[in-house]
Image (cartoon, rainbow, N blue to C red; front, side, top):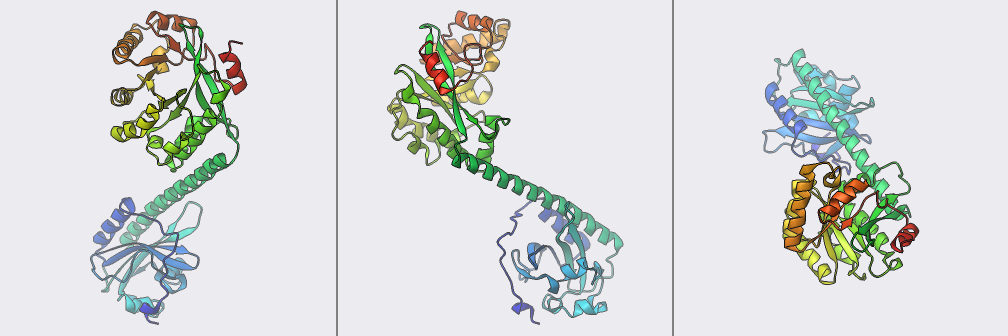
Length: 407
């Protein structure tokens, strides 16, 4: 049987190993053993697919993604015990000599180790061969081969676990997007000067996942490429109720820079009155695309949308957000307001924010107010907009309407 006539298949489940631990390990292994070719093969639906190849040969017939019937390969025969894992001279093994690939690939010596996964299945084999008989290969070399196969198995298990988690996460987020499982809660933002509710921050909750923190699900969506879609739906649900509040009430919604830069961003706000909407940038990590973000925000701000930077004081990145984006509102993180009544350092930092806001024309909102003492300390510093459980925990739409009316 001529090797060139073997069925060579491009299998759809090919792993994308790229560069990394396993390719480097296979290269080092081949060099150490002094072999011509090393490769990683996977068993799949009766075939043996080539996943990785390491060689110095320019015209090697083995290529990643190619496959042939498993029963006609050294890999399967070694796993089944029909050939030994170490063959110094192929001519000593009639079963190997009879294989079409032996002549086609000019195999004269061969060493291999099965790759056993954690669930007990055999993933495939790690193999090396040369075009000359090699009597220097010994049990120590085979032991090294087996150790490398074990390390490869760990990597495959890790990849499969990661793939399964991503698949589960994608199913979970898509289920959330397709079902009516998102609920908007509203936390009041109080205007101390006028002694009334000035607005509400919209916070998303997930009915089907009551024990999972919302930020975990939003982060999960971001990691699988569905973050902007989930954020967009949360914003649309929150602002659909804007008309339920009096005209002096605004609603603040959270958004990440990634969602601002997404192609669907403008569509979210296409038909909304924006003069009572505040967009809170929520990213803690450094952002390098400020000009693009400002360009995307500009038409919405011209239509009346207010921009806020959330969690100011929680990290260096928020200071840069403030300087780069020039927000209308700055929300002080609860790490600054907590115990501000007893902590001189916190008071000094908040006082600095008060001066900064006055100089730049921004408005300050203090988040996380939990006690009357904290509230009084903030008032003494000149903070007139506050938010926190002491003044009102996140509430349903009907509760929010009553709170806004002072009921």
